[in-house]
Image 1: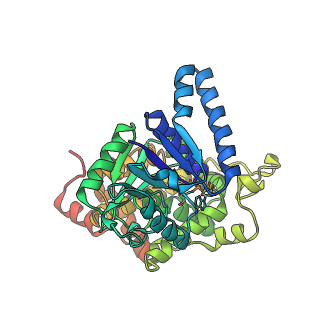
Image 2: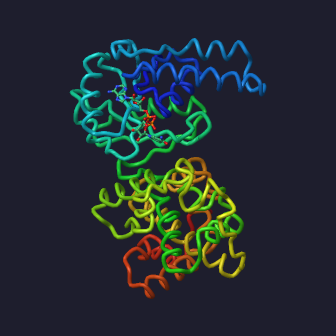
Image 3: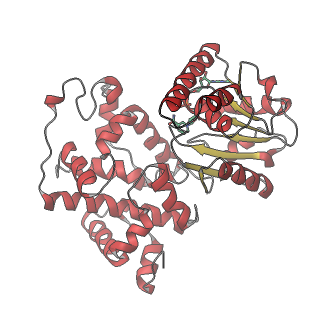
Length: 385
Ligand SMILES: NC(=O)c1ccc[n+]([C@@H]2O[C@H](COP(=O)([O-])OP(=O)(O)OC[C@H]3O[C@@H](n4cnc5c(N)ncnc54)[C@H](O)[C@@H]3O)[C@@H](O)[C@H]2O)c1
């Protein structure tokens, strides 16, 4: 089957590479010829490195690259069995592009979007045959990140979902199916990793370095929240938080912070601007963490139970299965354990009592325990086993 990828930027190129590695003739279309030229050179370098490291043979590298056709013309999608869109995150542009796409491809062609924040139902509304729309949300860098969230919308047919799931499984990815709701699984469940860390800082409990130390050294996370926000960019991360917050009709649980807003406003984006929560131009300016174990444990536990509560609530609202939620966080953002499995290990009663004590202390809705957690503690059940 020929695969079309629309948008030849960061995500589009990654998706095209994976498709080509799996033997599909892949048509990569971007409106900007320069982007395509750059992407082609980038892929040549990636392939050369893989050959050098002995991960693929020279012949395979040649075959993969020759599987990709670079084009600025969407008409080249006409023989594709699926087109995956990865263009700029703008609803009006995506909508216009999808209706144009539909006039080019066959009536059986699957139309997918890699959107991070728009609803798949809204994108599908621009199609005449709307049961072929589906969300296929890859993670960056696409060839390295195993997770793919598959999002059927209320228009999507069961057959399209089945075919897309088997395509993505066949590419060796870990495909999880989730509901068409803001943030899907990962970008929803991960919110407290940033939000609660900032809140701890705002309350003056600890500084950035100490919170990061607690999460990495004691919690086993690969990166601390502040290092991660600096890596993602405070402009990008703040915008995602704001988008999720408004998409959830301003549920206080997802409230963005003034702290990150000020960093964004000041242009302290993080790594890319040389300064964010930490200084990247002069690392000697960064204060070392306070390695007080008791303080570290408190920080880690508070953020962890907030993450767990979010994962439980996603299950409560049937966003995805328990297995999918745990896989999403371990394979999409490299969490050391699945959050529901972690909850079992900690004891659901311990998670609940920690949340209740914060809820009582602060009186804020963000600390409200999920009804499913309460129900399970009452019945003495666990997520697994
Ligand atoms: N970057 C990430 O980490 C990430 C992760 C998951 C999903 N996404 C989503 O993937 C999509 C693309 O993100 P990206 O980071 O690759 O962006 P990008 O800016 O790197 O690439 C977007 C490309 O789309 C092209 N483009 C814009 N309008 C077009 C049109 N009408 N026709 C053809 N090409 C067009 C641009 O020239 C650009 O090359 C967005 O919807 C984003 O939300 C991004």
